[in-house]
Image (cartoon, rainbow, N blue to C red; front, side):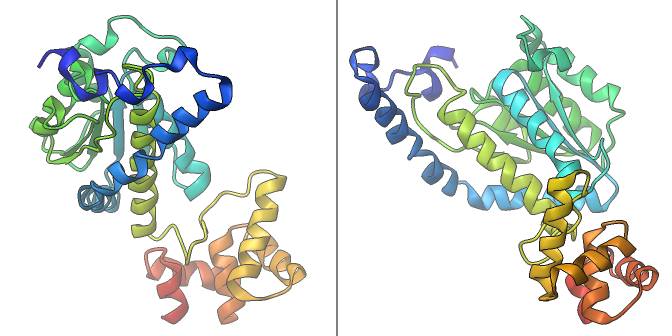
Length: 297
């Protein structure tokens, strides 16, 4: 398919006068277009749910969640991956973001990198890809060779694969086991897929990684109870989580956290069950880290 015929590359009839609008009307027009994104993503939720379950299964089996993309799509994958360790207490390298052209492409475009299927395959080879891993290919156009090459290699390796694109029946959708294709329509600024397409991809990635972590026991109620309290703000958040989950005073929450080196999950379990820190950790281990099960078990 010719690039110019893709929905994400066509002109938007509702924004033909951007350069003639006063500033408030200009940003209102952008906002009107952005309002379409959530509904487009909503239509893909059954496929997003399949991707969440596939990601959770990969992590439970000792695999990794690997995003790969070029340009904006690649940067969004790197962003999502980089936020998982502090948010969910997982080790670096469990969720990985690959961008065509390597880390330097986060800040400056690497010309031609996205045009190589071989580079996509090589980047996965360098990670020693395993059939336990889940590979998520990201491309607004749905046809980026770097992503296509990675997905082909991942499938040949035995991985489950996911494609996220903003065009129907795309190349990468046909290469993947699970295709997520939010159809956000033409961009407000023709071809600028960092706008609606980028927003849609960000929403999808938020759900995949957060949903998988919920399924892996990293969340209790709606609290990020495996968060790492690595600075003053996060220590305060840890205390508030213990208070909110248990109803104890701030002082009692801080006392419990000091006994767990500010690990939230065992601190909550201590308060609710009367266990000491070591026993709380042991109980959590018996329940694979799921706090709700440890409380009732």
